[in-house]
Image 1 (cartoon, rainbow, N blue to C red):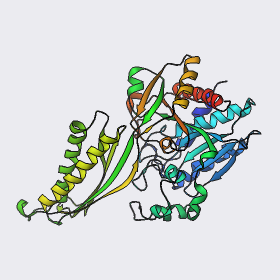
Image 2 (image 1 turned 45 degrees about the vertical axis):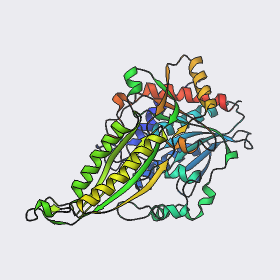
Image 3 (image 1 turned 60 degrees about the vertical axis):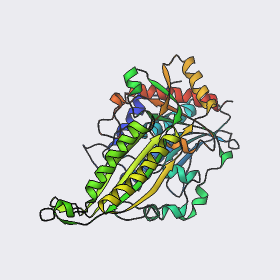
Image 4 (image 1 turned 90 degrees about the horizontal axis):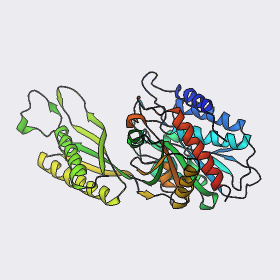
Length: 412
């Protein structure tokens, strides 16, 4: 049995036409009109397969294929459909359409399994709305709760709770959203690599053994807004130059004082009042820290706090620094890794055992069940951008590996 490359192409092409930024990459935030349209498209495909579908209080979609095995825990497969602003076609979506294809092939071929298959589409994985990633999987696993959703806000000041409620979700009853350990036997997420290792080494499959942890901090620096021309340099309390000093320091710490696997990024920054001839009064920016080693994240986080305090003191600024999201680095299940690896060997697929520097929803489920991940190459390592590209031949190969691995796990 093999996946259908034409069907995989159709899924991705049809869905990526639905974007808030035509001709400027894919922009499909969770809880947007574009998100609603893609959900409807996918749920129609699920209904055609007679899957049992439920949507929880934050918008996670769980669609189960049951074949006289409803009393058994599920093998869960899937990923996410939301994107960053002006993102690519393949991030997240590849894992969803390959999971849908796996279920379709198993159903069409009347493959008998001991366990149900469950396609899961996680909501708000990217963090594009509220600055913190993987909200859907964190709610699903109990890491976040209702009160937390009432504290985080989007760029126009609406809380996650308000946004989700406006989207028509039953967010007040999140306890119904919790995943129970006995519900799931194993989980595999297929994803594009979002790095250049597989493409550079010309290897079509990555089998992931570890996923980086992440800490996201929001830093606010308050100074004194004033005229850019008439305010002497020595009298300024400029939060912009303070932010620049902090950001450069974070780069040096991650590069020189932590580990080779440690990274730190500032990719989101707001300036008020944001005028070319005005000294800013406030700068707000997020610092994204990641590593497969928890100690690496701790080193950078400690240096961030110290540097914010030092710069604010030296420049006469007021500041706040808050941890707004975090996930632990995880080692994935040796059982699932071995199953995927054995399947790849049997089918003579070339593969590499590797780590993921990007965080994924699969990591959040690692404390509840056996979890594995399959990577397919990102050409030139590009992701989170319009130029993101993965060959459909590689997607098909990944889908075939997912299919065979799922059958093995569901037949044990």
